[in-house]
Image 1 (cartoon, rainbow, N blue to C red):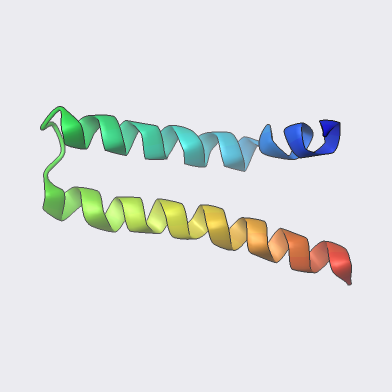
Image 2 (cartoon, rainbow, N blue to C red):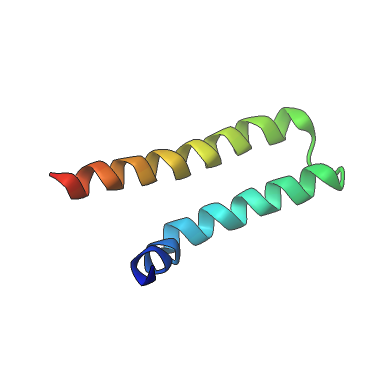
Length: 61
Protein backbone atom coordinates (compact mmCIF):
# COMPACT_ATOMS: atom_id res chain seq x y z
CA UNK A 1 0.00 0.00 0.00
CA UNK A 2 2.80 2.43 0.89
CA UNK A 3 4.53 1.71 -2.43
CA UNK A 4 1.43 2.70 -4.38
CA UNK A 5 1.13 5.97 -2.45
CA UNK A 6 4.83 6.72 -2.99
CA UNK A 7 4.44 6.10 -6.74
CA UNK A 8 1.38 8.38 -6.81
CA UNK A 9 3.38 11.22 -5.25
CA UNK A 10 5.84 11.19 -8.15
CA UNK A 11 6.42 14.74 -9.45
CA UNK A 12 5.21 13.89 -12.96
CA UNK A 13 2.01 12.43 -11.53
CA UNK A 14 1.37 15.53 -9.43
CA UNK A 15 1.90 17.83 -12.42
CA UNK A 16 -0.36 15.69 -14.61
CA UNK A 17 -3.13 15.57 -12.02
CA UNK A 18 -2.92 19.33 -11.42
CA UNK A 19 -3.02 19.99 -15.17
CA UNK A 20 -6.11 17.78 -15.52
CA UNK A 21 -7.89 19.49 -12.62
CA UNK A 22 -7.02 22.93 -14.00
CA UNK A 23 -8.34 22.02 -17.45
CA UNK A 24 -11.60 20.60 -16.12
CA UNK A 25 -12.24 23.56 -13.79
CA UNK A 26 -11.39 26.03 -16.56
CA UNK A 27 -13.71 24.25 -18.97
CA UNK A 28 -16.67 24.14 -16.58
CA UNK A 29 -16.23 27.78 -15.56
CA UNK A 30 -16.16 28.80 -19.25
CA UNK A 31 -12.59 30.10 -19.09
CA UNK A 32 -11.33 27.47 -21.55
CA UNK A 33 -13.13 26.81 -24.82
CA UNK A 34 -13.89 23.28 -25.99
CA UNK A 35 -11.57 23.56 -29.00
CA UNK A 36 -8.67 24.19 -26.58
CA UNK A 37 -9.82 21.86 -23.80
CA UNK A 38 -10.16 18.68 -25.84
CA UNK A 39 -6.58 18.52 -27.25
CA UNK A 40 -4.96 19.49 -23.94
CA UNK A 41 -7.06 17.05 -21.93
CA UNK A 42 -6.34 14.28 -24.44
CA UNK A 43 -2.59 14.95 -24.28
CA UNK A 44 -2.59 15.10 -20.48
CA UNK A 45 -4.56 11.91 -19.93
CA UNK A 46 -2.69 10.04 -22.68
CA UNK A 47 0.65 11.00 -21.12
CA UNK A 48 -0.46 9.96 -17.65
CA UNK A 49 -1.85 6.56 -18.60
CA UNK A 50 0.92 5.80 -21.11
CA UNK A 51 3.57 6.67 -18.51
CA UNK A 52 1.97 4.35 -15.96
CA UNK A 53 1.72 1.52 -18.49
CA UNK A 54 5.35 1.97 -19.60
CA UNK A 55 6.54 2.08 -15.97
CA UNK A 56 4.81 -1.24 -15.27
CA UNK A 57 6.38 -2.85 -18.35
CA UNK A 58 9.81 -1.54 -17.44
CA UNK A 59 9.65 -3.00 -13.93
CA UNK A 60 8.78 -6.48 -15.25
CA UNK A 61 11.91 -6.78 -17.37
